[in-house]
Length: 225
Ligand code: ADE
Image (cartoon, rainbow, N blue to C red; front, side, top):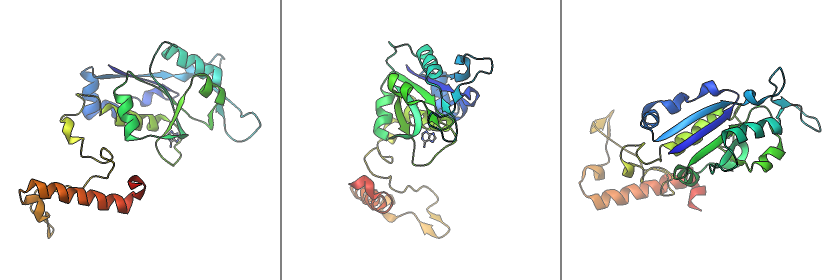
């Protein structure tokens, strides 16, 4: 079973949206599990401090390596084979390919950053894989962790209904998805493209592929390189 552990200063944010709809049902059905751990529980002082000022100066605070390492080792001892991921805008961009890899593995231990960053030594010592969900900066890693898990968990067999409804969606074939239509036949003077109601499955497939190509060229030419 895919098992996700989150290390965060805000465990009460979980499962949040991950507990709703098909992902929540998949959790109830035992297809995956989620546990959030309070990082502050591993602080050693009276004030439960987890961060300190950056060495060399500068703004903000940095998560202490000793406290984070203790949390990681408690949640996932060295023989735990799950990848250890740190949500960070410095990370490698999350891709559909990485989501597929994670979905077929044993799960993930996900550290949510806050403050200005995490001491580099714990990133190296625990081999944290830094993952970004995009080129913008969030206030913390919690929403980013939810994005990663939502992308991964929906790929676990049995979580989503029809497995083949995934094959044609954006990114699964390297292209953006073609436009979709349903009833009514006419909406505010706009008709469904005639090819889609022609019954000619060969022509429909060709039209959809052409639409995917044009959309990808216009919006995401980087995907075609
Ligand atoms: N934490 C803050 N910004 C982030 C981003 N873009 N991706 C992942 N984690 C983050």
